[in-house]
Image: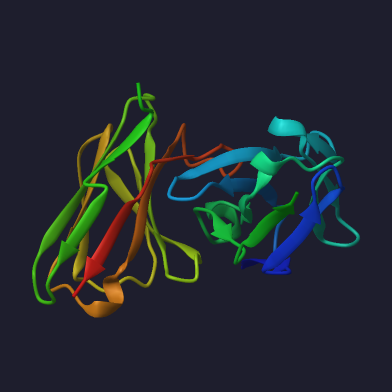
Length: 116
Length: 114
């Protein structure tokens, strides 16, 4: 079984401030973890993914995430927020058919608001 | 060129009608998916197809029937539409069923059932 919990349905930060979006996962086998971003009225775009090669993963648009097995976390960060970062962010896990499931299991999303 | 495209973008219809949503990917991928995003933006997988064969079928009512005429297309047909079917439906594709593969999403189809 697999699940994802995103803490905070809404996060508001000032432009230029640190962005921290939290994600915790539960998985019966080693997981593959993803962060996707959804801009208004658009589809989802991959920001970054963890595939066990490195625990600190760098993605597009200056985002990065760190996989911490001991904390079952995969939090997303960006040092300095930009107005264009305002969007919905989804953390997702996929453990594949070997783990008894397939397809992405998503968290409920975090709406990131950037204050000018 | 759009990697994953869906038609139509918006679909408004009456309860009880039958409708279809089409999806096409030009990425040469073997695996395609349908996801449903509800009004609270929660995303849930509905179907997965690999090489035109159904791989997973989550607890979706049998009023929903996916059809894959070839690897590049995965259509979603919905019979006897209900109010609760109102949602945004996303098609996605990936290289294979390997769980570490990125899934590429289409722009979504917003279905409104009146």
